Image 1 (cartoon, rainbow, N blue to C red):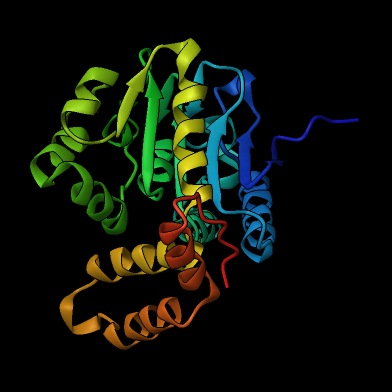
Image 2 (cartoon, one colour):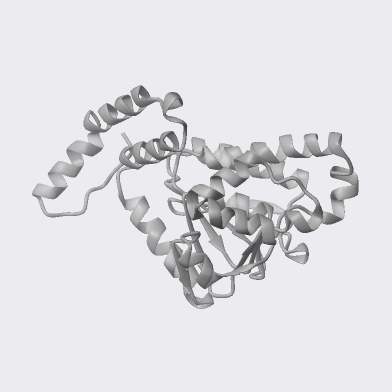
Length: 262
């Protein structure tokens, strides 16, 4: 049986998506993008899943970008590139629009499309050996507006331009200092670092978190396109929820609340 190049697994309230192509540093092909979108759709509908962790298998790479060995078959010219972009965009947008908190757990290389994937997540954590870069200028690829915009929101436009112009790789320390990653850990401690974050998220009120994430996505839009009405309705749902009642009771009773997302 052929090993799955991408797969999902559950760990309590945490959904995991693993890019499993370590022989090619978890480079992504079109069929992997299709599988990725399918897993996200399943996790979105699963009320038991409170947050999502994206990672790469093998320890040497998070995602090293597109599978260059398939450029001749999947991206040989402008028309083929349009098709590739349409399919990969579905994956990036499904992750960016995923309504629950998302974390990129980066080990090793996070290159090209891996950078875009990480930028679509809400938070990013990495090991000390992680390396970040966008080699588009070394391959003659066009790196689109949306990708540059999202990266620039995280690290600032001057840094984003530096990534694109130089094509060089940055260390974990440099990534932390520029705000690209939330924290850095030794290899043996990265899983624990991510688990502490996911545990904290899973214990908190899902409706409150959903509102915070929706607000963050609206902030990223031009002011004229922001949907404040949607946010007001989500805020009202929080105050009308059983979770709000549970939170108040738990506070008065000096115990941890048990939130159910309703």
